[in-house]
Amino acid sequence: MLFSPPPLSFLLLTSCAVYFAFRRLQDSEQWVLHTLDVQHSIDYFSATVGRAGRLRAEYIDSGNPAILSRQRETAAEVRGALSTIQRLTADNVSQQANCQKLAQITENRLRLMDQAMDLKRSGKSTLASQVPVNREMMAAADSSETVIRPMEDDEQRLLSERQKRENTSFVIIGVVLLTSMFMALLFFLLHHQIIMDQVQERMRAENAQRNLSARLLTIQDEERRKFARELHDSVGQHLAAIKMGVSMLERKLSGDPIVKDCLKLADDAIAETRTISHLLHPPLLDEAGLNSAIRWFVEGFAKRSGIEVNLHIQDGIPRFDDSTELVLFRALQECLTNVHRHSGAQKADVSLATSGNEVLLSVRDHGDGLSADVLQSLKRDGNGGGVGLAGMIERIREIGGELEINSKNYGTAVTVRVPAIRRPQSNPEVLPMPISEVRGS
View (cartoon, rainbow, N blue to C red):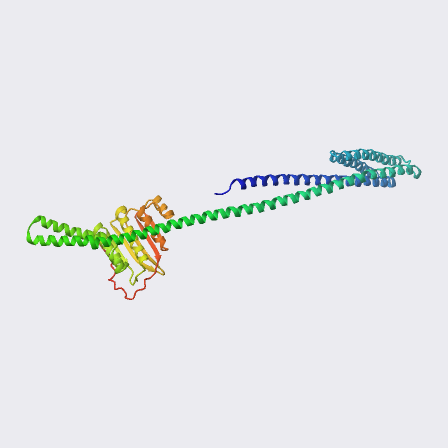
């Protein structure tokens, strides 16, 4: 039985671990990106302030109104960049304090820039008037740099910490995934071994069942052979002795109808006993081989059943080993019995031939076919055709053969294929000519 709880618990724990590890990684990545945004905003603020200062100097040198307009726009960008820094560092108290200082210094720098440009615009810009303003702007720039530098250092420190946390998250995910893969492989191997043990156990049970079935069939054949011999040698001899006695009595009581009836009954009993004995195990099968036994059985079947049987046996078929001949003969018995009992056919075809290293026995009737359900059950697991057919399938399988059944509404065809294992014989068997057709009475 498979162990369902441990793998299920493992999957749940692994899923939770991977989920939290990915959440940690996602948070770390977001904080790293956030820090990079702050750094970019600080750099952009510094660059924008520097550009505003350069535009202020260009305007003082040239007096170009277009440069003045550009400087005003750049000043607005400076305030926007500072606002962005304040928004991004809203969760950092120290950075918020630095932002307030930087805002005051920046407003002072922008005011001094406006003062210098106003002197130029009013025509009062002289070296003497600009020197004090420049001196204050330089002091404000130094103050701004003093505030920006710790802000950048603080963000760099946060970036290092958050990148370290991100790397740690990567490591955790890697460990979780590797552990999950290892445990999954371990459970797979464990379950695979359990399944293989179950399969092997089932195969052993099936083999034991098949061996038992084969043994039972072998015992059945031995009992049939023994019973046929007893019928022939014991009961048959007693009946023959009774017939001899009745015959002697008939000569003394000539014309007595009772004696004649008894003599006829004795003849019928002897004939029936011989038929039953031969059907249980035909002596021809052991003495003359499969070909002769098939001819004898087909001829008798046609007479008893009234079914026309066309028999074709390939020329030159040799003797096969006992098990092969017995299996083929029992298969023929079962097939023709089913034709008589179930098909309602008035005609059947039987053929025996060899093909390569195989012996092929084919029995085809021209009657009612099998139903689709029964045919599917027979092809799937050999069930649905009764005990006799199941025994025939088991006999064929035991010697490494195959049984093929095809059925339509106009008849059923059964083909038996078994390995052609020849019997070594010193005196070749002289067989009669093949019988092409045997007609029933």
